[in-house]
Length: 209
Ligand code: AP5
Ligand code: MG
Image 1 (cartoon, rainbow, N blue to C red):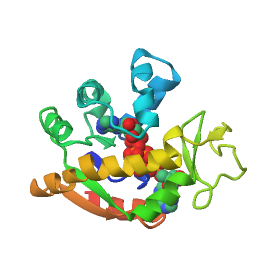
Image 2 (image 1 turned 45 degrees about the vertical axis):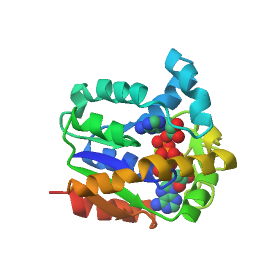
Image 3 (image 1 turned 45 degrees about the horizontal axis):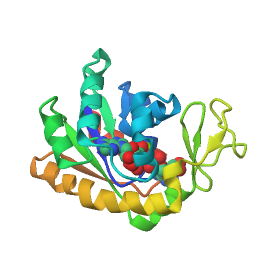
């Protein structure tokens, strides 16, 4: 199962990807997560991309494509993978097509107002990166991760200005990929509004052979 998760920021790509990766035992590859780890560890890559990500802009195609190419060369991707948040531009999609053939691009369909409330309520664990939402997916104890006990924080790019920038960038640069993949007969639309457990079951019904 070689899949791309496509959709606006805050659509729930990372949340569903974590559930699907566990259910189907395939790696969840999030370019955003790889960049955030580099920022946390203050690597040369992290220092280069921090301001771009905090401001809600896209990292350059060259950097992102090289990173994904490297990741997809690892053996754990042989049985399948989920690419969460890549590709995000037509040049990235063209580069990916030259690296591997994906089975489907899963398009998370959701309205802007829902995206804004999901992002502004998101909390992320500093320890294990698990996502929560203060209203729809709260932790058992406020500010503390259920899984590892880590501290929950607000992502810098979940502040109001960065959210609107990300939506603008999504519309201009990423949304055209929907028709690009549809034209290749590879698009699967998924209604991203229900609870994540409901989406997981629908997803499984579509993709389980
Ligand atoms: P990235 O990390 O990919 O961010 P994003 O695409 O903006 O998506 P998010 O992670 O914000 O949202 P999500 O869809 O994963 O939603 P989530 O599951 O967390 O990228 C970050 C940055 O890195 C980019 O802006 C860019 O700078 C750079 N970058 C990354 N990839 C790049 C690329 N290919 N090229 C160039 N630059 C790149 O859910 C959101 C919230 O909703 C959570 O609080 C969650 O608990 C809640 N929620 C989730 N599902 C549901 C549900 N079904 N019902 C109710 N609540 C839900
Ligand atoms: Mg995500």
